[in-house]
Length: 121
Image 1 (cartoon, helix red, strand yellow):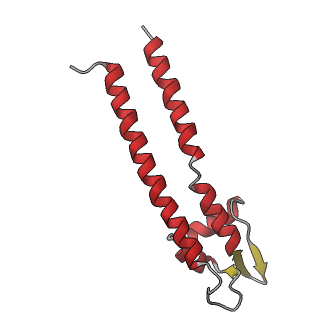
Image 2 (cartoon, rainbow, N blue to C red):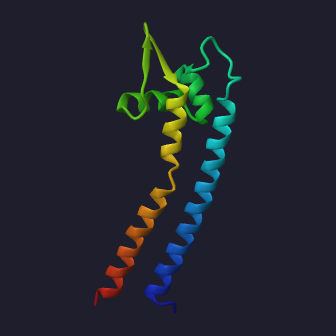
Image 3 (spheres, helix red, strand yellow):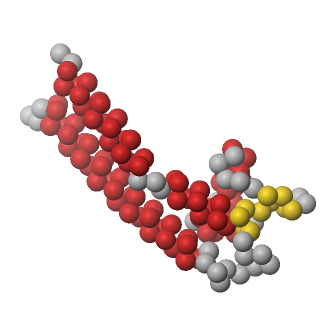
């Protein structure tokens, strides 16, 4: 039977591996966003996107984009009754969501958990 410490170490190893894979995938998505939002972007004002267009770029749902703006996570501009999102704000927001420093914080928490398990009777 595998000891508790070995089992936890294996769980952590697998979780870290999954996180690294996800970060690599998200970095590729951000790179693709930079490409899609480049100088050739179409529209009346390529610097600003509707929530629907921002959702397409982000690969999500327009309601999710609206929720980001309601929470204040993503700046929004009003053109009359219309909401507009500056594409540079969207790219910055998505880049923050994929920040690899989050992985370091998660690993620190896992290390603390392992240490507490090792020290418990």
